[in-house]
Image 1 (cartoon, one colour):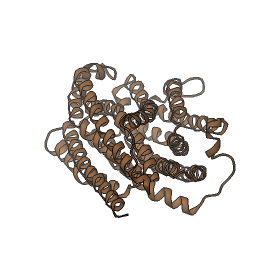
Image 2 (tube, one colour):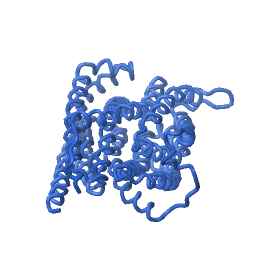
Image 3 (cartoon, rainbow, N blue to C red):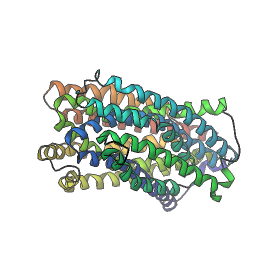
Image 4 (cartoon, rainbow, N blue to C red):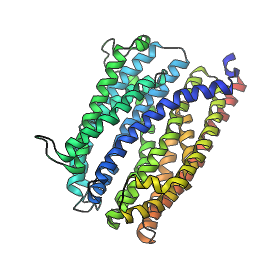
Length: 455
């Protein structure tokens, strides 16, 4: 076990982190950009269309991230096999992940077909329901492609090839604009569907992305030693259990966090479409910027997971320390960007005076939680690399749904704070999650060090 005490240099680890992080960051920005394009194109139709998209996306995003989040399990499993020098396992993990992804994608698609029935129960205004319902029906057909793409993406990134995913994501941004236009405004036999057309465009795009990535992996020689498409392999109960045991808590943790942000639009919908539209703009801005610490967290999962497979605890702790230092610097830069350019950023979304004023006010709350958000997602990334996912799942559930949600509902509905009340709830939830995840990570590192000393 001599490798337990082997060290690594700061320079080497920073280079590895940024080599992984930068392509992943471009990928994350591109994928978030898909929602940004939807929001901007809908915003130029009307406030009603923007509000309908806010409701539809508010329900779709949590479902999509729950099921694609489960497939994040592919990343630490492949990283561990890579670190343990067992490449023969990697192809099997990728194949089994695709099986799990296909099943989960079908289930998610069916759930989205039934979600529109909940709109009246959730108190969504009647004038928003038709467009939001059609959006959900349409986008559900793309769910199997979303989950299978997530599995292939996790496999490719974990073995050190994030760039193909990046290239596909960038091209997808360009393809979405004409697809959205066709379904939103109607071309030839396709009727004008307004904001609901975004659902059809996004579903088609997801299938195109999956086909492109699978074809690239199959044909490129870089994947030869771990090629998942060499032969057919039936579903294996051992890997099914491992992927779900590791992935389900990841998916649920992401679901608990993202759904608290997304459902805020539904909580605020009785307050009027102007407030919902402003909230959606502020959420969209912070969602784009969240891609920075999230990309770092994915890179941390891969690097921590590799050292976890090697059982190299010294190097693993150094990676974590560098990760948090990087996250802190990036959070400060994000806060400065939001403070100095908030007017210009909001102006990209809308020219409506009232929506603009409320959105700028809400961006101030977003500035307040940037540091906590960066630290909590970095801690979660490190814990995933150590294959600790169940604890973080419970932490996020308590932080967001037991604490943040009731605080947000009370302040927005019963204390006359309006949209600001929801954002105060978010700040409270993120702070609690951050403290608890950092304590969990500290405990895990201490336990592994004690085990190493005892050997």
